[in-house]
Each structure stands twice: as C-alpha cells, then as structure tokens.
Image (cartoon, rainbow, N blue to C red; front, side, top):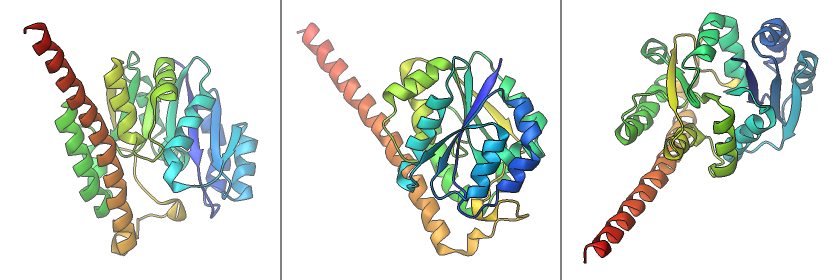
Length: 261
C-alpha cells in the first residue's frame, strides 16, 4: 500500500531547515509524494529546503485557531487516490530520523482501516512533559468512555483512506487542533473502519526547541495554560458528538412512542 504525505509546517525560527535537507533521501524513499501546507511566517530557508525536497507546497496565513483547517487542507491537497498520512511535519521529521522502521510498520498496520490513529506507547508517553501527560490523559479518558477505545489521540498522526479523506473534506467542521478527536469520531459515525497503532519513537518538542534533548516548558505557567486550553477544545469537540447522539436518541424514542400509540 502506497501512502502519500500531507502535512502542515509552521517554523518561524528556521530550526527544521537543516533536518529537511539531512533527511530528504529518507523522506523521498518512504513517501512517493509529499504535500506541505506551510505557514506564511515560516522562515524562507525552511521553505527553500522543502522545495528542494520536491514537495508540493501550499501556503496559509498563520492562525493557531485554524490549525485544524490547515491540516484538512493538507490532506485534501495530497489526496490522489492513495492513502494519505497526516502528520505535523516537525513530528514527522523526528519520527523518520529516530524511528524509521517504526514509521514503516505504522504505515503498513491494519491496511483495511479507513482511519488509522497513530499514538504514543505507554513507554513513550511516560517520557513526555508533565503538562502533556496530565492534560492529555483526561482527553484520552473521555474518548475511551465514549468509544471503548483506549487510544492516545493528541499527537495528530492519522493514516487516511481515500474514503476517509472524502468524508473529512465533506463533513469536518472543527477548524482547531481538536480535529484530533473529530476525525475519528466522524469516521465512527459514518461507519468507516478504524484502527490503532502505537509507537515508541514519537516524542514532543515545540518547534522552537526542535532538536533539543529535553523539553523546557513545564516550568512556564503559560505553557500549562495553553495545554489546558487545548484539552478544553477537545472536550468541546467531543461534547458536540455526545449532544448529537443524545438528540438522535430522543428523536428515535419519540418516533417509537408514536408508532405504539
């Protein structure tokens, strides 16, 4: 199964330029086509490195509130009848450098799944910054109560079938990064098949600390506030699906009661 890459990239500090150049051969060996939706604030040297990679480049006006829309645009632009892997490009660069075999295994996992969620293993999660562990586990727990699936959701890596890309293009309404939960919930509602793969090789860094040995944000109150805000966005997205299911149940019960009057 060939999988093309549709990714977003926001690098106003230029940290990823050297990594793109260094990993170009590996990227081209794994992905037969690469589409990057790059923010207007990304440094020119990063854009030049992406162009030298042979990626198809589109641009968007940077806006954190619209990250989900930029992700959606990336997969739609990458769609060519093959499966699409969505990933934030800085995460993808680390993954292919430090866990290429792990990446290849994920691309081949459960080939019949329309949406394959790729998450971090318990070992990988245990190494993450505390602010991520403590806020993301709440999102993951709520999702598990809704679906029965004990998945790590907030790393934004999804392998999507052509049918899943079409469904997301037509039905996705959430423009924030809460599409982490929206896309799999839309797929469940549409009757598409879902799968899950875990990785030991994924880990988080801000783009400002790309390449750093350790994350330094746990002592910054703003970084904690941002993670709480991100969790709240995911909670709101899940709430919409619960509210819709409850309304459908009420409507079904009403119709049933009318039938038996």
